[in-house]
Image 1 (tube, rainbow, N blue to C red):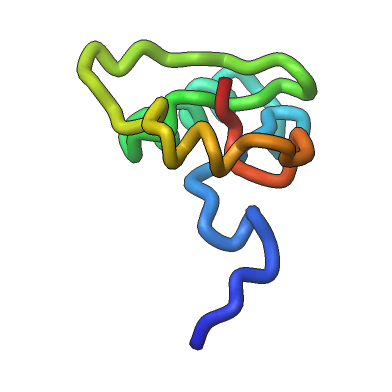
Image 2: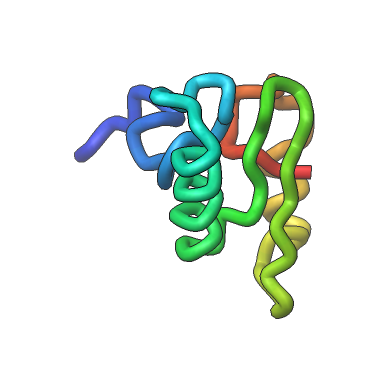
Length: 81
């Protein structure tokens, strides 16, 4: 059985742009594009959330997803509203 030891283990791109290196306009846009291409429409910049409109429905506000984020610390899970 595989044990997930960190949120970063399965993260697409960088979930918080504060951690992006090297930080440039090109790397910033490339990271957003990479995450968007994998349906990761939310990305942090510190405590601010960037949201990219996918122009389609995604299963991100289901009762299960709401419960998953209830009473969790800010950086415990992937970026989300």
